[in-house]
Length: 270
Image 1: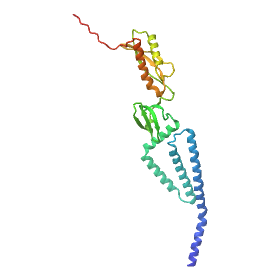
Image 2: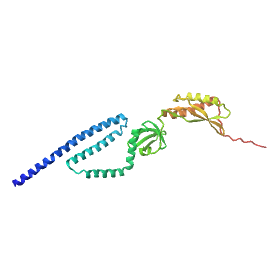
Image 3: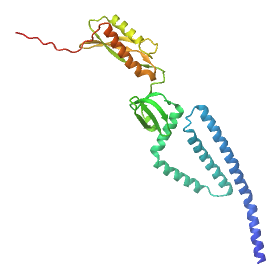
Image 4: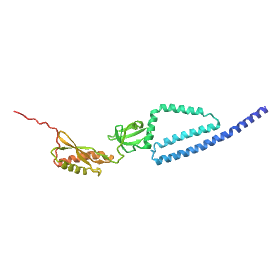
């Protein structure tokens, strides 16, 4: 009995001597590795702040990087102890594949959202035309872009759809050309009418000081069609658009210019 107990104690001591260095090494790897992961994530957060990355997506990215690095540290510690890590890697790979297949579309929208936040084809507040939706970007989320349209609708567009076609940022240049068309009677002098339009535009609030284009665009059946092209900021586009038309109409009325309209002349023959 005493012999068996002595053998058992000796076996435990031998096992402890054999495994102690490995266990201590694994514990040190976990402690130092997790500390390094924390530092890396902290530096990553500072880098994202300095790059201007959207603050809404920063916590998600930092937690994602933290989880990946901690898994690598854990696998390293398990390998030092002697645990076979092939099964762990296979299990993680299988789980990742299953999740990826289930969330294929969602992950695509996430990747597109990250690309938008990094390369910034548009920012919050920009006036954009994306997939035929024109409006101001209210928010860029991880999976969606929220756009407030000009007719006061809120469009929630998945980022994968937003980046799958042509994206037009109307705010990049800081100004937009306002396309107006004005009809001038054939009997009126062009230079005279051009001066009247220029005076009307000068009275239009929020118009940018850039010289507007006022030229003959084409001739129709009743009038000469003029192309009038002033400039406005993206925020003031519609104010200038409607204000310019109103002032031009008033100026034409004050000058006695009557725009022709289709008429039918009927003659009675005896």
